[in-house]
Amino acid sequence: QVHLVESGGGLVQAGGSLRLSCAASGSGFIINTMGWYRQAPGKQREMVADLTTAGRPNYADSVKGRFTITRDYTKNTVYLQMNSLKPEDTAVYYCKGRIWTSSIGTSDYWGQGTQVTISP
Image (cartoon, rainbow, N blue to C red):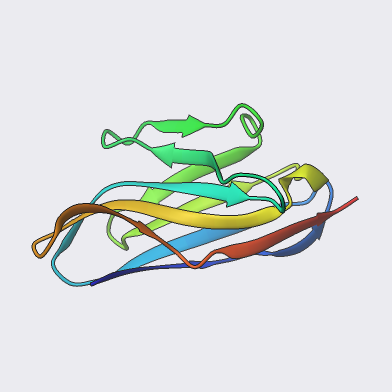
């Protein structure tokens, strides 16, 4: 069993910064890719940033130049540094991992989500 746990959300003013963390835990797993998604009220969940298996980042156009995704392979943790935050960044942010386990092979795992609220 693999678990993803996010942390770092909160309430900040526009122009501020937040750093999200997502740690994968369990046993006997291999992480292929990890990324961040978000879902605002009344909207569909959307990709914010992810890392390919080669470690190359991809970003949604709306966050390019403001958000940075990094990964600590030794800690099975992915981070999302969010700068110059805007009210439209308000959403629940979810971590997603494409992870291989010996029991079920490769599957997508999601964290429980962390709320990010940006005040004007």
